Length: 136
Image (cartoon, rainbow, N blue to C red; front, top):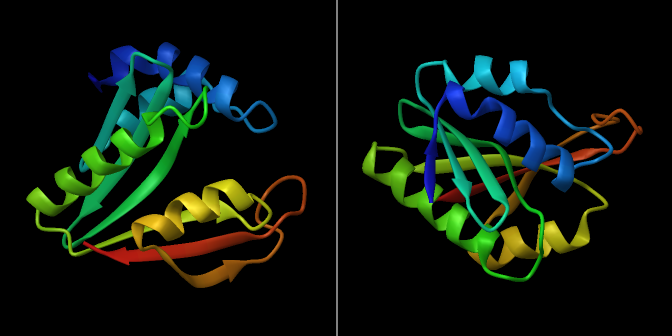
């Protein structure tokens, strides 16, 4: 696992684009996000990324994904994020996921995330985002 810094923005953008080809983020966005206080990022050499923000006693997954599914990459990244957030005093973790992304929703449900709200027409394709939360 590689701890990401703004210097890794190009790699983060490339991995994000491979995971989310319909809504890729550019390197400038990753550089800006990674430079913010409370922001943590990781790259998995097998083709995964996690961007996490911790503020006070709450954490938020900004983005997480793996190019190759069902290889344990997402699980390893999520566990690292949960452990990091917990070690920094966070007691809850939040995320948003596309309502129609059934595999991701099942992945988060298996870790204990529950639906806490909905953002209507959040994504550029008009799909809703589900807000999910887990106590950590």
